[in-house]
Length: 456
Ligand SMILES: Cc1cc2nc3c(=O)[nH]c(=O)nc-3n(C[C@H](O)[C@H](O)[C@H](O)COP(=O)(O)OP(=O)(O)OC[C@H]3O[C@@H](n4cnc5c(N)ncnc54)[C@H](O)[C@@H]3O)c2cc1C
Image 1 (tube, rainbow, N blue to C red):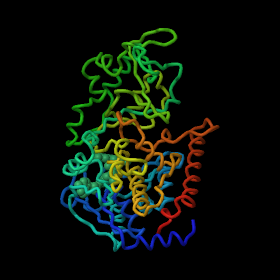
Image 2 (image 1 turned 135 degrees about the horizontal axis):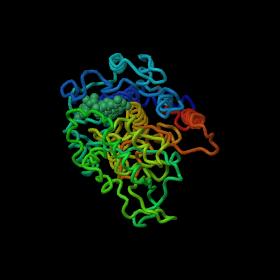
Image 3 (image 1 turned 90 degrees about the vertical axis):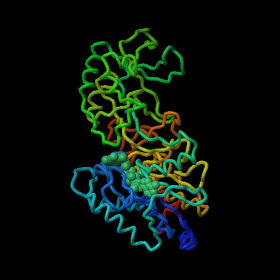
Image 4 (image 1 turned 60 degrees about the vertical axis):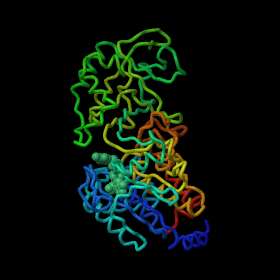
């Protein structure tokens, strides 16, 4: 792209347009930086000085509320690749994370105090930033706005979001069942069939004999669970974790998510003592969720206990189950792959509220939403980083998932399209996927989206 055109566009933008960013968490801070450095005036609304949520303790921006780890830094890891792509796009938060890194092997862990104070200081250096230390409550769809108020969005804003989008599009709790890679199933120990033969072969069934069931049951009721915060006590009213249901009696699961009724082997006709069903998470990928297995077990316990289901012995868990308080929209209904609201093109939703899950994922959505609000307001082509990059794959996945069972998604290899002739070795295979992503991003940055990506 000719340098001249980019320069002209920057000059046109400078000192002209104001964009609202709501929430100075991970997504909001990243979005702010991307807009400020491109010359936009940003009106940033952040309420934590006056109204903290139950997990916030600091007054500055980009607070890491729990772990201080941004997960793996290796590009053969999905979250590691996501960070590398963010570095390529000049992410402020990943740059600061790299600067205040603390030793933690192959992971990127940070000193959380230095991280938050440095991000805040870097944003405050911009003269084109106005900070409103107040709760933002009413959305005006005529003003270009990025809403990034996170998993614990304030109650008044939740009401406003519900009013704007039809009711039932904003959720309050995660109840995610584990998702596994179908390629890692033991094919000899599972089969495709629908209950009573009604359907189009939508389920993979993983049967258990009586002794296998009893061993699984015993492990499940004694497994370690995650300690919940006090404010999360009400989480389970509508959606019970599988381990809680199990504790109601040894057969409770056989009348619930492990019900064998109406399921038989399509070739032998054999019936089973208990059956676990797996259902496709999306039409384009190999991701299957364990139906009805929303759980609060710790991640290692999920791996240990659920791998006792014979077909899942060597299963690869692409994401583990979680249950906690989490505000998020029904992304496939509300936003497109640019994090832009389908019905209100001036509005963009980023961060955990958009339906991504995790620190780095929230940062990536803030960055992409910012690039796209720039594109939209300048009449430039919207930025689609394709589903082979991890940033793009996340945006594509959440905006095109099945709306009925939508649950937030983190970065993982199951959401990127596979490649022909990949090596069997997992690390080698991921390396090829990572190289494809990096080359694609380089090309898109140099050519198709040069204007937007190279604004300084
Ligand atoms: C308890 C908990 C623990 C978590 N632990 C981890 C973890 O260890 N690792 C991980 O990867 N992910 C974790 N997550 C998930 C998620 O990655 C983080 O919550 C992440 O901070 C989300 O980024 P965000 O930018 O979407 O929201 P946030 O970082 O929460 O930022 C949102 C900001 O918006 C502000 N805000 C809210 N409402 C309003 C309003 N009406 N007006 C103005 N400002 C408002 C808030 O004060 C906040 O500063 C956790 C989530 C929760 C709830």
